[in-house]
Length: 465
Ligand code: CO
Image (tube, rainbow, N blue to C red):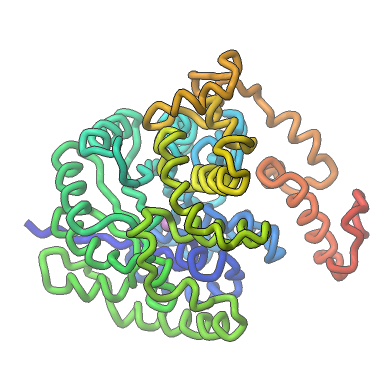
């Protein structure tokens, strides 16, 4: 039976997020969008993740306006975004009314598929986003944050996948954000999922450790429905495997993608010029290119390793790097073996640094460590270490869905954003990024009025003009 492999293109979201810290302005992608729209991709991932934050913080772009322009430029292709469950695109849990409104506005402005994940794989943190996506006519794809370690048995993944299907998800993504998945693991996981669940299975990985293209190859032979790839100039390194390589790999086989390589070549030619500019400016550096085998050895995401180095540098303690690397798996174990992805990777990393630098483990608990111990991020895959848990008063611990404790907050946010609001969506930008959003709103007004935004006084709370 012919089984056409589908391709999800990531260049303008995860590709550029991984290789140039999400700093690609809309103007750098715009010339390629019409060509991308003609390829016949399963979807184009173009929004969410860190793109929203980067738009307002660094690029003076309204993320909602960017989405509308992407929609206009690509009318024939499904547009996909990445959403961090109850965190939306921010770093705390939001109340259900904010999650629901965000999902509604994302779909209203052009998103077709919302890929939703939770750092702890606690599905209670996804259920509002999934329900809202379905309600507003979107495709809800739930991603399982992939990791390895004691609790992550085939039974764990099977049970999780079945519960995702029961939740009403339209598809499942195996999200290997760190590039940890080796070919045999992919083959076993995909075979198991294809025989246990009915909804399509997607695979997402990163080239960081170098193994990704082989992992995709075995996953495809095992029957995966769709793989995530990036057009060649934004592939490899910490990004995804190259779209063209995967298309050519399966050409003429029963998995043939049917995509036209000459169309991909033209898209690649455009992004090659962007890549060269980014290399020249230093935005793209050798640090993210090439192969970094540390991920496979330490089972720690590449981005987390560079965060640890910079935290230690700040404390003039770079010589403690190896001690911290050894402390990371111990802290992870103490905190219930979470997958290492935002925000759990930061929680574990920061606590490991504290434990090493203080000379005594858990002498100081970071605010985030306290929150995870209290159950505020949800349920961890394994029980947490009793002696660490004992540092938190029992009355402060919760076992319910964390968002059940949050009152609706949209009305209050509407009030706070007040005079800054120029469109309905601004309240969501403000909900996610608070003061950074307000600063962006001031810059946006200045730019529109022909005033240099760098010349305005950011401390002045009123409009610059
Ligand atoms: Co990714």
